[in-house]
Image 1: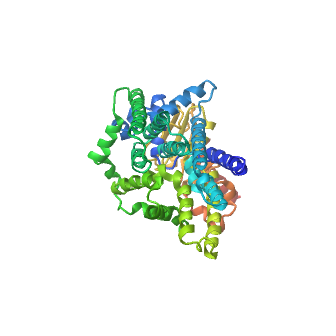
Image 2: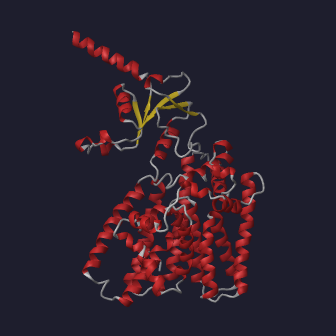
Image 3: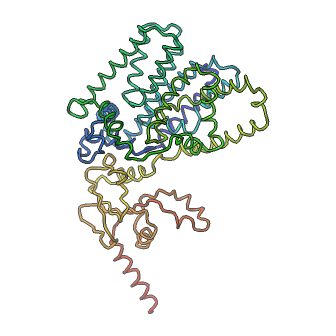
Length: 498
């Protein structure tokens, strides 16, 4: 198999490496606050009081903060202490894990797919769907947990002899998946149900699988003991806070059909039908399929829960290529004339074009552009530094960002540019997203050290759209802007008088 798809594998490996490098930041702020900031507390970069409410509620697993902490300690021996380098290394880890899970799932099912075209389609979709590549490099609980589950499932399908030791190993991997994201319990329940009712696995084997899960659950408790500095049961705290006390509902409620609408809109219609229709086709025509049993309870529970976010379904993303190809087999069986039709061929061509464009975008663009601002300040100013801002604090998102700040960096709000001070012992920066403030700084000859809008883009300033666009800029302040402008005006008046 490797030799047959060698070029695809090599191209995919390069693509994942590129995405891991450029796709800095996070998809959702929880990916940062409840991992990097939590780890930052253990590393002494911030205080408990600065952490999100989930920390006080002791409802988040400590395994991801532990990984960040260990990465910092290991690479400190190589004199690598930049949080941006560590974040990149963690994205590389995520990319490698995702690549492994994709390979194992391909290996498990490639010989079960009918036709060379469908086989090649399966491999290509697995490695090159734009949102799969974007998610593959995220060091998020959704991605890591989902990929571990895919690995467990793929290994089981690949095993020719399913002895007792392998069921225990399966339980260990599933347990690890659960530790990274507790909601994966619903994927595990669906899988175990399929093992019992359809695969006819023995009770003894399922008990061994359960033993593996329980062992990892116990290890998770030990990790949480290290993280919270006391004995806690974060799984119970999570259930209590979100289900019994309904804290989750405080972040908004959505109707039952939310996920279908979101998938259709975000997946770029009409191509997003590729991510909705296949599961429905398998549910109707191949209800014994393990993917149906795995995804259905996971989907039903998330539809039932009032607070919904599209990322909650991300642990199941890895199955989309397989769902699509298996649905293609169903269509071949029942509607043979559909796939070869001209309309379908046009659809495929347009899909390849839009997927290619989005693939380039997510591979070379930061997931969160403000992280590039943080990196610029961090890398260029290791001396005591003050960042002044008016209204828009670049380091304040849903919460304050500490992980990406040096300890000698201060961020201070002012109400006008006249309030900027120039301490002798500090570098002074001014950050803004306001075009009027930026114009004043440029008129005062202040040096631009960062802009979130690349200079080459400004070359295409047709109808002055750049002048109307809000984007981040950071200036190194050498002189008080108001004084510079006043002197400039005096010089101009003197010239007029002469």
